[in-house]
Image (tube, rainbow over all chains, first blue to last red; front, side, top):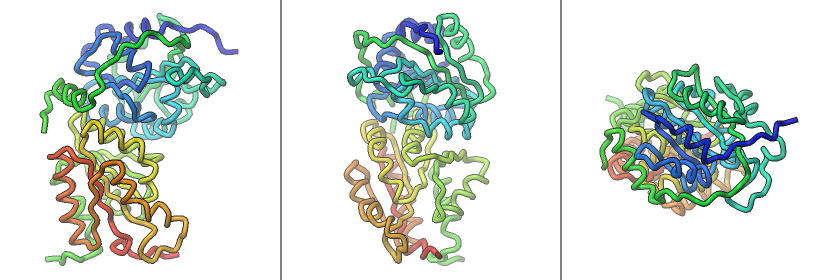
Length: 196
Length: 174
């Protein structure tokens, strides 16, 4: 039987972002983007407001382009489920600087709180492990979050995916900018890249 | 000097055009039409290739690569264009450079009727999502068209698809 222990998502994300250093972050649409914004806006954050199923793959492209920087993808269970095949692509690509944290509340929280596949028992960490990601796991307490936070800044054997079990509650929204051109140029500026 | 229409060597010339345009990332699905170009890219130490499970993954990878300063190309068949539709929102709204090279099915001497619906709708679908679409019917056309498309994508932040006609690719042998 799966343990019912769950985390406060804002507290978990704020803890992951502590002492973020060189971390580059891509957030999937909906609550993960609000959680990341609530933890503190930053030039090295890229928030998706659409492109569902594309967060981890955006992270893959970024990780391959910036192999010297740690890349974190923060996304939800619904967004991750829409891009399940991407886990196979990421496993084959095998970047050592990409970590995916799936904030899993077992529901499609943004669109009416319908139960998602993880709410019906699907184990995303097991899917990721079966695809061949180097390290996977499920986190249910703040000690686990602190271990993950520290590991984000350490070299890894390959891509990692951690499921973070969070409460199924819709918190007050913390809205990042929605202008993707602005977010893109801000992010590239942070990396010292030019604007066309 | 090889002629413009030397069919055996167009993938080699395309590989050179992509390198000259600064492309260092290549996403692809398995494709007979692109087989030689994929092999050239895989064997090029300056290029990183990703094999995809579905074409839309390549759209997101290309956006992430550009965020990190890398230019990429997506190699796919016309049947995969339909898989990309919603993900094309990302380069469209973020004005991310996007270069897609699409080998056509469902046109010249097609044997498989299942290729017809998506082949017929490929250009319309891409244009509906805001892409600029060019088409090449000969190897000479293709090289010049991809050079132009790469400039539009990487210098003018456009989303561009080049359709490589089935006539150019040659009949599939069954």
